[in-house]
Length: 114
Length: 113
Image 1 (cartoon, each protein chain N blue to C red):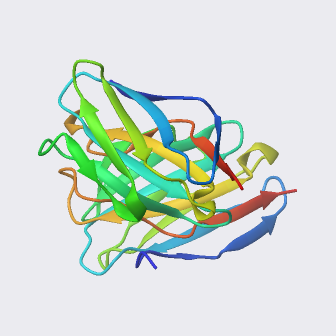
Image 2: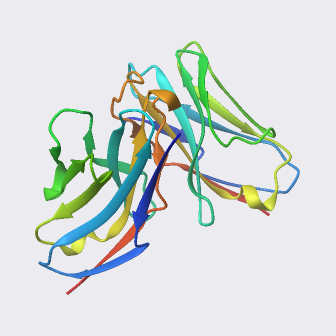
């Protein structure tokens, strides 16, 4: 079985502030972990993924995430928020048991204020 | 542009009807996934096909079915539609299933009235 929990359905940050979106996972076997972003009326775009290589993963648009096995976490961060970062962010997990299909969290809506 | 093409983009139909959503995966991708996104259920995995064969099944209703054809395009059939089936349906594809990146299409908006 596998699942992810995203803490905070809404997060608000000021432009230029640190972005921290939290994700905790549960997986009975070694997981693959992903962060996707969804802009209004668009599909899902991959930000970054962890596939058992480096634990600190760098993605697009300045985002990065760190895989912490001891904490079963994969939090997403960005040092300085831009207005264009406002979107819905989804954490997802997959593993061999699921046929590598993605199991998504409920999403976190990021609001960036001027 | 992810390279995954879905049609139609928008669809309005009545309760009890049947619709077919179509998906063309990225060139060369053998694996196709279908997801449903709704406000109350979030993003739910429905079903996965790999090279024409069903690979994994998620929360897909019995009224729904899918298939992947020899040219690798896929169709999701939704029948006896109910108001609660109104949602955004995503198709996604990947080269294989061992942790490869899964690319999503723009989705098909289904409204059941």
